[in-house]
Structures are given as C-alpha cells and as structure tokens.
Image 1: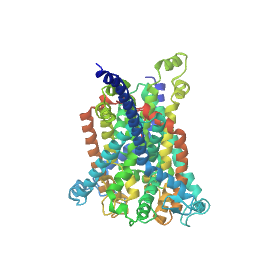
Image 2 (image 1 turned 60 degrees about the vertical axis):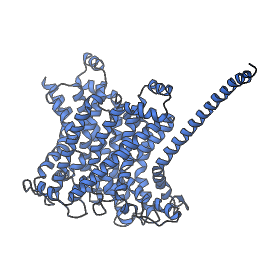
Image 3 (image 1 turned 180 degrees about the horizontal axis):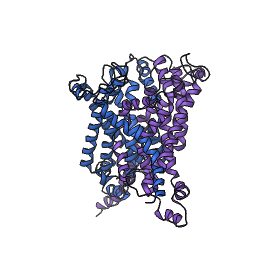
Image 4 (image 1 turned 180 degrees about the vertical axis):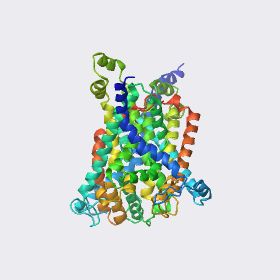
Length: 301
Length: 304
C-alpha cells in the first residue's frame, strides 16, 4: 500500500476511531476497572479487590431486584414485545395495506416520542386523583379513585414499556408474514383451513426465525432499559419496580438513597453486561443466528 | 316414478339454496371477521389515541369533562411561551435552542464520521479492518445506558459536564457502531463496476468516493440522519444526569422539572409544554414515517 493511500485510509477512519475510543470504548473498559474500587463522588481510584462482588453476594436487596428484573423482562417480552407484536403483525397484514400502515404508524409513534412526554401521558392516564383518565372513568361509573401506580407498580412498568416495545417485533414480523408465498395460504384455504388454523399451521412455523431473533434481541434490550421506569416510578414504591440496571443507576445518581456509589454501581453494571453477553452467546449458539438473518440495514431500537 | 319426480325436481332446487346460503354465510362470516379485526385494532390502540389526543385537547382547554372532553377553549396553558412557569426556570427559547443543538450536533457528528469510515470498511483493504469491525460488534454488547457512571467520569475529566457538546458526543459515539454498519450496507450494495470505471477514467480514490459513491448512499445518510435527529432531540437520561446547569438545560430537563414541581397540580401546563416538545418530532414523523418504515422493512429482507 502506498503512503498516500495509507494516509487516505487513516483520514477516513480516524474521526470515528477517536470518538468511539473516548466516549465508548474507554468508558466500557473503565467500568470494568471501577468495579474493583470504592469510588464515590471524590472520583478517586482506591482499589479494594473483590469487595464489591462480595458485597453483591450479601446485598439483601439483590434477590428482590433479580426477581423484579426477571418478572419485568419476561412478562414484557411475552405479553408485548413478542406476544402482542405477533398479533398486531397478523392483524395489520389481514386488513387492507393502507389501514394496516396507519395502525402500524400509530404503534411506532411511542418509540419516537421523547421519553418524558410519554411519561407525562401515562402520569395523566394513571393519576391517583379523579383528574386522571382511568380514575375519571372509575368515578363516573360510581367508584372511588384508585392509586394505580402504587397498587399495581409492576403492571404499570410492564404495560408502559411493552407499548413501546411492540413496534420492533411488529415491523419484523409484518415483513416476514408479507414475504410468505401466497400459494401456501391458498393451499391451506383450499384444504378448508380457517384463518386461525392458517395462522397456527402455516404462518407461525414460517416466521419462527424472526420470532426467535426478536425474542433474543429484545431480552437484551429489556435487561438494560430503565429510562421509562425511572420516569414513572423511580423504582418504587419500596423497590417494587427497581430492576437491576435501575438499581445500579440509583446507587450512582439516584436520589432514592445512598448516592454516588460509583464503584459498587459499576460492579452491578459489569455483572449485568456479562450476564447479557452469556445470554446472547447462548441464543447465538442455540438458534444459529448467522444462518437465519442477514445484517439488517437499520434497526429500530 | 311419479313419486320420485317431485323429489328429483326438488333436489337441484334445494342444492341451489344450500350453496346460496353457504355463500351468504361465508360473506357474513367475512364481514364479522373484519368487524372483529377493526374493533380489535381500535380498542387496543385506545391508550395511544387517548394519550396523544389528550396532549392536544388538554393543552388548549381550561378543563376536561370526564377527563376527556374539552369544555372551554383557552390559551392560558401556553403562557409559558412568554413567561416562565416560575422564576426558577431558564429562558424557554434558550432551552429549545439547546435541544436543537443537541439534535443537530449529534446528527452532524454521526453522519460526518460514519460515512467516510463505512466507505473504508466496505471498499478498501487495510490492516486492522477486521479488528475494527469486531470492535463495533463487541461494543454492541455494552449498552450505553450501563456505562453512565464511567461516561460521567470521562466527561468530567474532559470538562464536558453540563455541556450540550458532551452529551451529543456521547450519544454520537453510542450510535456510531450501528450507523457504520448501516452505511457499510449501503456501500456494499453499489456495484464495483461504477467505482472501477471512475478509477479507470483517472479519478483519485477521494474523488471517486466524493463524486461517485456519496450521491448513491444518500438514502442511507437520510435514514441515519432521521434517526439521529429524533434520538438527539428526545434524549432524556444523559441530559438529566450530565446537565444540571440551567443554562444548558434542554426541553427534557425543563419538562422533568415541571413534572417535579407541578405534577397533578397543573396538567394544563404539563400537556402544553409536552406538546411543544413533541411537535417537531410529530411533524418529522408524519413526513418521514413512510420512509422510515420502508428502510426498516427493507433491512430485514430474507428474515423469514
């Protein structure tokens, strides 16, 4: 390679290399290093060996937080990110294309809505006084206002996150369903299969790879997402909705209790990343992703 | 014979009515299925329809009957446009400008940085090419949101806390792996012949990239720009964690504070400010939605 073309390559790569290194790669390495320190707001590197990991093993809150994380992740996944998004994909491919598109756009909208605006919408829907949507209906029908978020905290975060999560699966399933050859459906129809039977025996088996892909991908997304939980419940009441990643965040920056626990927070983050990586390796091996998915041009995250 | 004739004559007639009935029943069932499907679509979308509808209706009215029906139109909720909700709030237009700066800064950085890099990764052979591709994939295992603590440290060390620049650089870095892969995909789809003919005609590699390749990856640039802009404009967690200084607030911090100060007390103000914040995204979404969807779906071809 000539010197000139080497320089050309360097110029093309340097900017992204620099930004990725400083704002992504170094923080990633640093998180690993920080997990062995007791860093606090003074930001001093005081290495304490495996103490944070020992503390993790003894953290009496952690079993509860793990349970929250599992319930939140798999309930949202089953009910919304996979379950409801399959139903929506099926239904929107059943109706005329234009109508289907309108409803898909509607379900895509929450993903592009600023999180705080989406949060404000739900604060109003679930407001504990009679000013909220649900409670105004309850009061109008003769009931008394319910404190929805306090009484059903887990349902709140599953539903609010789920409604954002459906669009990813919906779009992937929709295109997979649309690419099923019409002849398969005609053959099933000629054999007298009802719509439900067609779905059960033709459509679903044919989209099983996208189904597995969305399951795996969204498991990881849900494990590390806490933005909407932070806005709506801040992890409360009394840790009822504190998931793993939110716990780490609150230890470091939250006003919930002890602040600026950077070292321990980093430990929790790094363990979560390791668990996520193991999960994706398992998924990768079990489902043989490489064979089933071409690199998508763009993903909705 | 005489006895069987009416029956024989009746049979075809009866058959005819049966098939007619079958067709009618089939049609009824189809209509019923469609009614059910539409009802399902509308009912499940109700939270969204109510939520977004409320933002608009509530912000322009004094009170809502049953929490839904606007009773008295008024612009009093929009007073924040000329006068801050309380003296503790920074200037709204400055805040809006900061939000735009974050979105534009992120978009420009992502596009300017990923477009040349993706070209090199797609078309040029050099040492470390595979390592670079592997790095972007490995980083994908580290969701940015788990790196908040160390990012805080880095921004502090670089004196970029409380600055919009710091936030958009971090956001851009997190988006880069995806953007590079997307752009690489677009370059990969251009035939080599186009590039070869330009090179044979005596263009340098740079001219080839700039004049021949770049115009052909414009759809890719458009799509990563749309995504970057919307994500930058909407950013919440990095803004509220890294920016305390009121001078550098974005609309996310502004509304977050209104939520803290007026939650449940003044939904009029909340819905008006929220609508103000989401309005550009809505406009953007309506105009690019078809396009966004096409890109998303185009990307998963062969997914079944």
